[in-house]
Length: 362
Image (cartoon, rainbow, N blue to C red; front, side):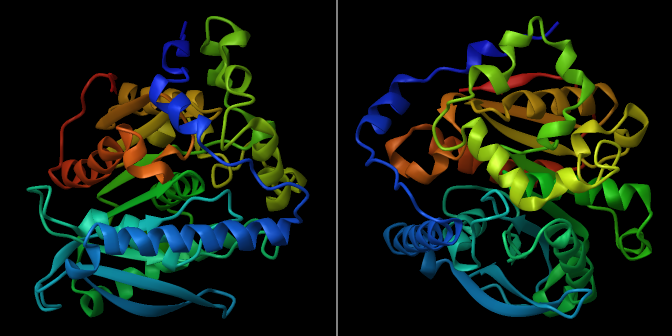
């Protein structure tokens, strides 16, 4: 029986950061909160591009992806400076986080550029493809899922245009983006969408602080805990950044609970996939926050994949909450976060063999 409570914290480093944080805004409408946080995320990304010298190491190009209903979606590629389009590179498809409510194209510039930046790593150069899928409350389920699948197909149809290699596409995401990543990988494997099935198999997936199951349809693996009180839903119910109440808000805005087949629908709940359904998934890297309500579903899914022959690497950041990376150099785990993402991409492309389930933690 499992007990992951040792990772919860909070850590001393996090407590020092938390003490200096301003009080969160109150009495804002969903629309006001969305505008405020998106503005802050874009400003932070723009500052990181300057402070970390990222603008000089990447070349960016904007694209337009047409979704299945005719909607035009923003997309952007990030390529190592000086590497021409004629030189084909592996591709990382990036899906941002934000509870399906927050996030813009520009809010991801620094994250995507850090992945491309070769100054601090020796891995294979790559091009990052960033898609701005649609968000709530304007667009409910399955808009984001449809957009990501359409972007994946578009990417393969335009692979020469962005200078990529079709057989070396790794997909990854943060939080809600991790959910979309896991859903995409399973959908392609099941072959129900002929467009996805016709594309080369995803070479790997990187799941950072992922949500993998809808609140009302948690996987039966939760019962593998030593005690219900050890659940991260209980231990981390009031955790910073993503308390359970905010999780429920995000879920309500999606409207998933209205679907009759939600529990059985793996597009909605990839974390509930059976052993047979996951056994041929690509190499998978997990980055999981210890003081996060989503901790257990990430760890259980990682264990599930490893036990069914999927090459799997799991890293837990002890004592920090969901989304801690936004605080940058104030937390030592931020550098490791970047390493886990970049190394996860390179590791997947190396075609690793399956290994026993093991949790790495800092």
